[in-house]
Amino acid sequence: MDILGTFELGIILSLFVLGMIVSFRILGFADLTIEGSFITGGALFAILVNNGINPFLCVIISMLGGGLAGIITAFLHCYAKISKLLSGIITLTMLYTVNLRIMGRSNVSIEELTVLDYLPYSWYEFSILLFICIVVFALIKIFLSTNLGLYLRATGENESLVKNLKVNPKIFIIMGLLISNSLVALSGSLFAQYVGFSDIGSGSGMLVSMLTAMIIGENIIRPHTLNRQIISAIFGAVIFQFLYSLALQLGVNPIDLKIIIGLLLIILLIVTKFGRRNKPSKNIGTNFI
Amino acid sequence: MNKNGLKYVVFSVIILLLFGCNNKGTGIRIGIVQYANQSILDSVYSGINQEFSKYGDQYKLEYYVAHGDPNLNVAICQQLVKSEPDLIIALGTPSAQVIAKNTETIPLVFSAITDPVEANLANTMEKPGGNKTGITDMSPFDKQVELIKMLKPDAKKVGIIINASESNCVAGMAYVREALENNQIPYEELDASTSAEIITSAQSLAQRCDVFFISPSNTLYENLGALKKEANKRKIMIVGGDKSSVQKIGSIGTYTYDFLEMGKNTAELAIEILEKQLDPGLIPVSRPKNTYLFLNIDSAKELGIEIPDSLLDKAVK
Image 1 (cartoon, rainbow over the protein chains, first blue to last red):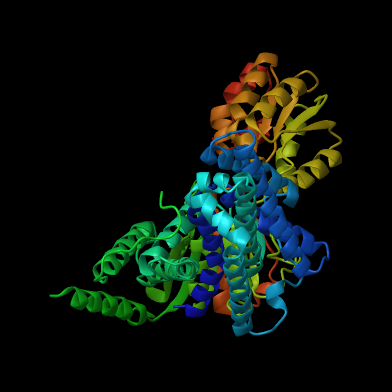
Image 2 (spheres, rainbow over the protein chains, first blue to last red):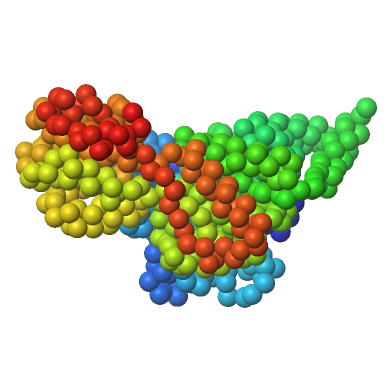
């Protein structure tokens, strides 16, 4: 079993889950744009780095690209008054074309050095990813503890409270989706670097997988504080990836693989439920999924 | 049993599964990754399986399917590389790319990949380099274009609907253009990336062309009915496509591959590499050995075209 690879992929995807927590849980916005901005991140990175731009700059630009998609969704919701789900779906639909236009074709391989290639040997790839992950998680934690971050969290929990404070909640919806989509695009760009190519199909089913990862994380780490909520992203993503490896390890018929993953998931959720003696405490954030 | 006990039992079962299942048997181990359950890839795999089964227990196949899940694809490829099989066969571009990224030592044979050079799987078609070689499913466009020359020597203009956003279509069209220019056949291309655009493009082309050529665009393949409708209205000859385009859409004829045979060729290539200890990087990326001609006599009759006997003899049906 490739434990290192499982952890590396888990770390990359934990950024996706973190983005999801910001929009789904903290902001209370079920934003489907992320499935598209995941590909946008990878596509922008692949094209820019192949054109000889510094890989670190490429990562930042690809994050901005994903964030822009989030802003569009937020505008559709706040100003065009389209429902949350639908505005995400509309942006997601349009992103398909945008991503194809960015790449020019459906599959682009990365031919230049990436952020992960700066140090040799496989353990360094892991440490770079871990470093990026820790920095991003710390930044998000710090941001959510500032005044701005508190307003953002309040927007998700109780929008009318924010209005009573004479602050426009729309600003925080836009800010929240900008942050969550940038995180997802970062995850997408790291994923593309990790596998060595960007593919138009690489976002398919990602949203549902990562939603599962988020819920696994929350089942294991009861997120009744902000810190726990953020940390649950890492646990969720790594354990979810671990389930995949475990199912593969069983050596079942390829057709039965997905049912094995489902069964492992059921076992995991039951075990975490029974293993808990005290009653579940109140979770932070909105709990509509 | 109390709840804590149950917890420990389940965890120990998981740990046992993790470390207990290292079923490395005897024989030469071949790892096969397939990106998705799709008809072409499935038939390539059954071809590979048939060929290897001839050798009995000598080769041990380990077969994985990623079900089109990008995440699972990476997990499968990493695990496969980690288990160090003697050779890996990858079907589908994303799987081949991840395997190529993860190993530089285990020989990789890819198959059913339209453009290995564009996908960074080969440096050139003649000399792929590294540990990899394989078989491309780039259709024999030159032969398909020759059909136009043989069946309708006085063709005024060939209309082609393409999709510039599909990499396999762009790659394939390079060959089509070259073949058309070599045969001095005038042609016109229109770009269509949605079903609606295909209908308008077909209507527009129908006014100026007397032959339609089916480009390797997936969008076009999904909407061939629209092309057929326009062609029937104006008695335009359709050429090219795959077997089903000839049987269902009424394309007058095409040359194409048998994907089961492509699988067998893939397996033969893998066996050759293993038995003769060849360096895969030096083996040119090949196309399947045989092409098959399919003709639709009904549409030929409707259009009043005589199919030469030389072609009829070669055709599969």
